[in-house]
Image 1 (cartoon, helix red, strand yellow):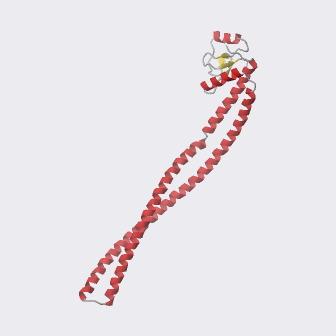
Image 2 (cartoon, helix red, strand yellow; image 1 turned 30 degrees about the vertical axis):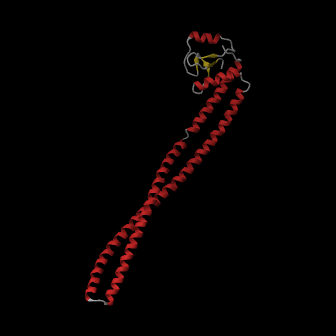
Image 3 (cartoon, helix red, strand yellow; image 1 turned 30 degrees about the horizontal axis):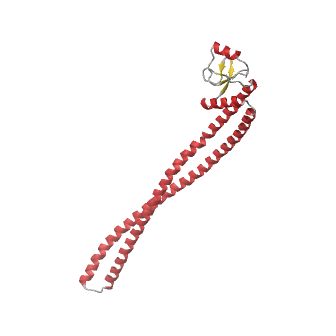
Length: 243
C-alpha cells in the first residue's frame, strides 16, 4: 500500500483544483462562440468566393458577346452605308441599282436584328455586373465581420491564456516538493478519469464519483494510518481524508 505524508495528500487537492480550473479554461478557449461563428463565416466566404468566380466568368463571356454584337452591327452598318452611297450616286445600270435597293432592305432588317441582339447582350452584361458587384460587396462585408469576430476571439483567448498562466503558477506552487510517488499516481489517475485523480472524502462520500462508501470500506479507510494513500473502491481515485 502506497504512503505519502498526510499534508502532501491534502495539498494534492490544491493541485487537483488548479488542474480542473486549467482544464475548464482550455475547454472554454476551445469552445468560444467566436470559433463557431468563424467556421460559419469561413463557409459563407468560400461560397461567396465561388460565386464571384462564376459571376466574373459570366461577365467576361457577356462582354465578349457584346463586343461581337457591336462588331457585327458595325460591319453590317458599314456595308449598308457603302451600298446607300452607291445607290445615291445613281451609277450603274437599273438592274444593279434595283439589286442594291433589295440588298439595302435585307441589310436594314439584318442591322435591326443585330442591334436587338446588341441591346440584349448589353442588358445581360449590366445585370451580370450588378450581380458581381453585389457578391463583391457581400464579400467585403463578410471580411469585415470576420475581422471583427477574430479580434473578439483573440481578445478572449489572450484573457484566458493569462488566466492559464496564473493557474499554472498556482499548480506549480501547490505541487512543489510534493511526494513524487503520490504526484505520479495522481497524474496517472487524472489521465484515466477525465481530469480528476484525487477527491476529498466528505461525509462518507467520494467527491470524485459522488458515491457513498459502504460502512465496512469507510471504517477501514478511516482507521488506516494518516500517511496511507487510500483510493475509492468505486472509481479508483485517491481519497483525501481530513480535507
